[in-house]
Length: 395
Image (cartoon, rainbow, N blue to C red; front, side, top):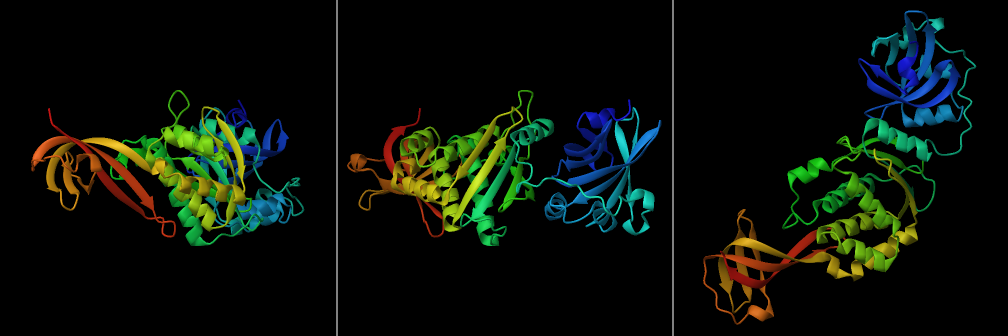
């Protein structure tokens, strides 16, 4: 059937992979001029060149976000886009009843008149200032690609400035990923270390930028299971549910109390990176299961959240039980040294309740310790302290 695959909102192209149709500008029996998005986040503008009983042909033009924005605003014609592309052009041949389309590279300098749009042809798109901001769009993309999709619009000093300094953006991206990882960890890690499995399962990729103050697109690295959940879906949703609480102190403390202390620490560091950069932000989140979150957090909200997190040190405090070898006790200086079964070293102070106890070292024991984490607000560095609460003989 002619156009059967394209009517299913996607094209499979041998050299480009799966191209999902995100917007149609001209439709006559089937899409004639339309925008696609590849699995790597590349925008591709497609125009139909020819259709016959054997195949349909398109010219494919990869577009950067800035060039796409110019096209949306009718600042550049279709002729200019195709005759002076930013990179490669592809001629796509879709044979009817064949699943995968053929792609061949075309040199823009060798394009014929038939392959180029009219010189006065424009998208004639009614631009509203923000691209692809419809809930249906982001949910559909997430469902089609089976990946979590996040759109984060950073607003420097609550303005529409489309620039941000490299160090601030780097901090934000790092602490964003750390926050997701720590929420997913559910308190399994010790000494602040996350397992490699946790990191891999919750990896989030930056796939592009979009028209906003400073818009960043993210997608989960893993695809969803049969139930529409990726390994990162729950942690991503929990993080943005935290944001949605804004400065509701009671609910923030309650929510963080259900997570590991590490989650509260990493959340505070992420908030602090936004605070130091003087940013507000808007975000859209969608999962393959059709979960959707749309929030806006002001610069003032971020300051209030940060103050709440800084005032409540209990989110940085937890009690953990370990098995291993007690290797040293110094009652005079009130210190202990312990190696767990994985060979990790823990040193710290004795709790007042056991200072007068008698200890035999070295000895295999089970212990209960309190882990406290302090964060330097200037450097965002973490420092771990341990207090020995109880020592029991191993069974």
